[in-house]
Image 1 (cartoon, rainbow, N blue to C red):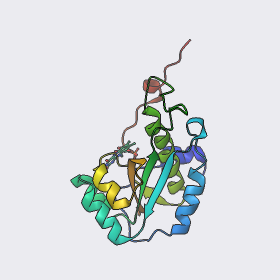
Image 2: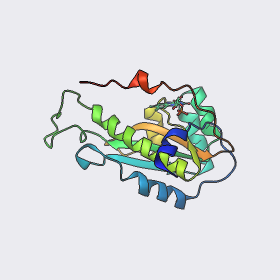
Image 3: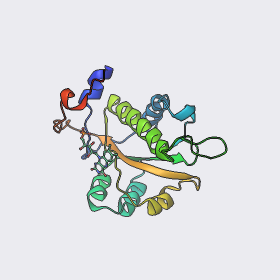
Length: 179
Ligand SMILES: Cc1cc2nc3c(=O)[nH]c(=O)nc-3n(C[C@H](O)[C@H](O)[C@H](O)COP(=O)(O)O)c2cc1C
């Protein structure tokens, strides 16, 4: 898929068809995603994936948000993006490198998440990035390590059709030319 076309046509997908997600495809997706930029190339993001229906159901039951629970219930896979804390945005002695403190941990994971959803789209897999979840419950269900935090949850699945895009702001509303 051509890059600009992919950037413009990817949509958030919230309903999925019955086709299963093969782990081999997920490995290809992560193989592309891992090349995204990160703070000083620290590569703090870790990916937790399941295509096990029982586990997907358990994630759904513990997400702690009804809207998201119903979406996950119908997903064919769930990818959880976690990150190692106190590395991105920090010096080696753990002092913050900028006034923004832990900001770059989420920033790095966001960059990685975009690479991930675009890679999924390239392979015909729909995704929805979720920012609302019960982190404590989810950490236990997924088995996320003690020195990691969860940035987002991404239900996945093949889809029958792409929804039409929600209204996006025009270039003139977004771009400020500075002289
Ligand atoms: C950081 C972030 C958090 C989001 N959280 C949720 C969520 O919890 N549940 C949900 O259904 N969609 C969530 N979304 C998806 C947005 O609603 C969606 O991207 C937006 O409506 C634009 O649609 P589009 O992705 O098709 O352009 C989230 C997206 C982002 C980037």
